[in-house]
Image (cartoon, rainbow, N blue to C red; front, side, top):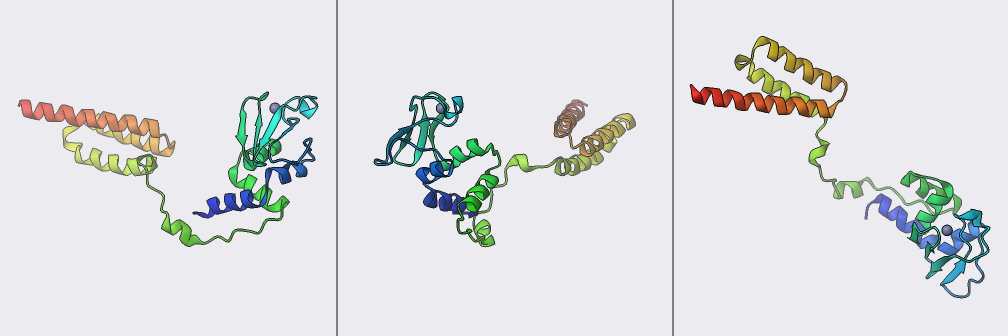
Length: 187
Ligand SMILES: [Zn+2]
């Protein structure tokens, strides 16, 4: 379990749906059972007379009228209430408002769970270096104009951090290489 997962568990272990509803002054008819109905605080400003939303097992919130609120946990509920998008911010909200004990951060957790490096992690700067070498190695087979143009384009893509352009140049270089191969094998 990494640090974020521990913080999520800390919130869920300590803040029940009922506790969160009380925090927002939302009161269902009864707390006698774990399943209860209440007015939904999200649609029609909670003024609707019908008890259209449900809490199941004292844990999850569902509103049949809203439609998009299905089995929401306390985090989903508070996110919508507070209009917070950022996940770490919603964890901070719980930790502060409910006085939760801070989950200690142990850097070794991250060390043990290294993130997989995806191919999309190649930056425009990485690709610039690769293409630069390729262009230099192709210098003899290129006209001066083409050589200069390719350099101009990769530098432009790097400076604008334009990955699309960088990939277009990469494709162009591949095409030129192929063309050169065909020409040399034909002669
Ligand atoms: Zn609703």
